[in-house]
Image 1 (cartoon, helix red, strand yellow):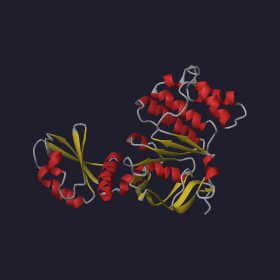
Image 2 (cartoon, helix red, strand yellow):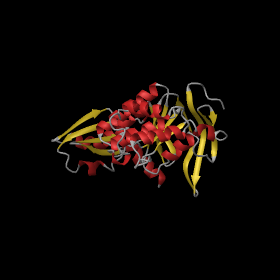
Image 3 (cartoon, helix red, strand yellow):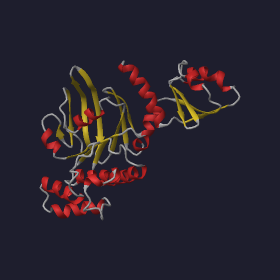
Image 4 (cartoon, one colour):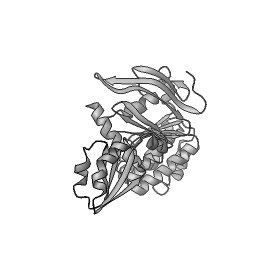
Length: 309
């Protein structure tokens, strides 16, 4: 199987089991070079396993494909040398300074000018002035920048981010994503798992994985459109409305959003019939709205949990 120059990852029929439990099932997908590809799904649904298979860090039980032009079954070691991996847990040396950590990584990868490479990365990520600070004394946002600098220092072609912004404040998250987009614009391909809807919306494409099954993929707009959800936003005297609607025919999702309630269903006619008695009640205002990515995410979570059971 030969991947086109514009395709970073091209895989077909991937499956993987651990202890008799299948965690990835017959997965096929493509990832374009220089794109940011987001993975969403419940905890324990196989997102990390899938990403590791895609970039050659884990061998599938069945299936085939290429990553960065290399066969994922035969050329795993070559792929690994092209991958930068940023885990959710900070994994650099807490008792080394920012500069020392980066210089250590640069030497580990055999960069010709380790000190110069580290200094360039410090400038790029806005770490100037913090070079001598111990990594263990940095806040979550600065640790995140340092970790990103370390895993991109050897100039990988593929960057793997496993929930990289957990526990980081909104400004630090935004700064982080600005840098990710800058790296992608330079040709770096990025795979990222996240639970944040605003982060998913910043990806070029997303995939929703639940208990090993790929349920949705495409751009955010495509995933929302393919969900075929009809959604209403309800405001006013909500009271016990959510509980009353939750198990009605045609109602696939009921979720509070601030002072409003989102009510969605894939069968528009059944949804309309079920909510009709409440549409006429005084004190409630019903507004038909476009489903959000979060609406789709919650509906898929509800459906995938039932499938797993």
